[in-house]
Length: 411
Image (cartoon, rainbow, N blue to C red):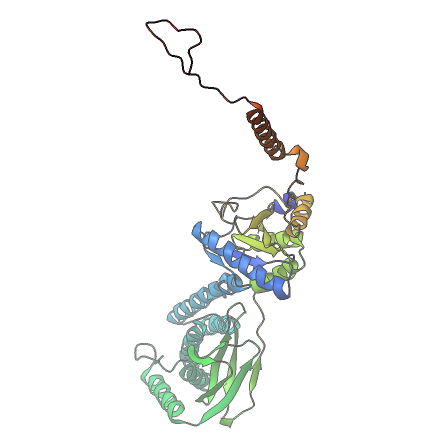
């Protein structure tokens, strides 16, 4: 019943999604070591069947793409607004162009965590400087040129884009920033190995010491399985206090940890429900294979394959039977899981191997050999007795003369 309800609205996993093999029920001590051995055996069997497999608890979630497609699409809105501002200036509508660029800057600032957004932010600043200069707003134009120079020094205002006076002023601001004072600070984060970038250039892993020119910069921190963090920061001259960043985990990583908790508790209905939710978002693995090892003297395990449509019937494996009982096609769905079948399989894990004791020996008088020996002895005794009483044969010599036997002649 649970599997049937979960199947409603489930979406097949992506073709490139892996099969994940986990240890269920959080074993400890020697049982944990046995479970790890079974986990590796099952993973190897699935790989030999042609499946892409991972046994790392959260690796499949960490491999998910970290950028939201909707946020990436917002950069297209920035490009569109910059283009519309250019067209408005060509029609001598500088005020309309400035309004569009204000919207473009707001959007670009909101998606600085998307790779490549810092370059687009600098592009907006260049367009903003040219438009502000046309309206006589010198302070706004110079501030925009300074932001463009600190964030993307390679973006140079060309002669075809602005009057010579503005081009010269932009070059002067860029030289002043490149040769001017610098600031220093340290960035720390709660995720080990997070990558720190400044203005689209990778600095290294956190914690990182950063030195940059004074002015506005785009600071970005990224880690697998977490939402990227990015802010527009003003670097001041000299040393400043460290910046501490807390990264929020991606929904797929949160779901992976929820799956881990559910599998540790043996709550397979919760596992299937989470996989169904992930499948609707396109983040589910192809299958989650849960391995539960025996705790007794017998080395056994059961394997349950869970998918977005529900969990399948448990497969019983032992040292002599692994690949022969696992499905030849890892993507083939098993019969739906029944609570009674799972309970029986778990009871089987620690059942002792039945050993039939040998039958008790027959009584000696029921065996044939005593009577054979007795028969031989009796037969021998009878033979000896008969031989002792049998008369000895006598020999007589008879003289025969001319074919007649004379009477009384003997010898």
